[in-house]
Length: 182
Image (cartoon, rainbow, N blue to C red; front, top):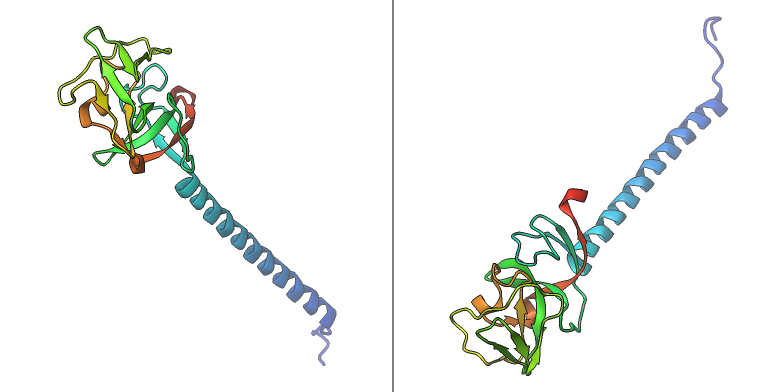
């Protein structure tokens, strides 16, 4: 051994290697956790929840153009007046579940909506007028629902494209995030 060389310290070499190995294992563990969380997030937001943005003012004042809507896709039983996300002509829409299969929907000339002979007013401030294409009284066919927007004079809904098949209901709206709050 020459005088300029220091003696080799094996314990220090082992410590450095253990430290490098621990850092490597830490990064691998972090990567696995990130991948796991990404898979869980992907499954939640494609199979359980639905996030979409409202287009138009068909549900005004409850939902405004640009609002972010979060829906629950696993809903099995819908009730009248539930706000749902549905697909019509390949486009996602938001509307109010008004009538289900075998219900009779009637819209008279005064703008009054009746389902099975009962007036449906609720908190809707706009009158409901019939549009061309559907004869009233109208019986909703099996496995279909009748959906209307809240802004009844300015919306496109079941009065335009008929009853919506239950398979085209994507989920129930569970929360709305106003665009001015984002």
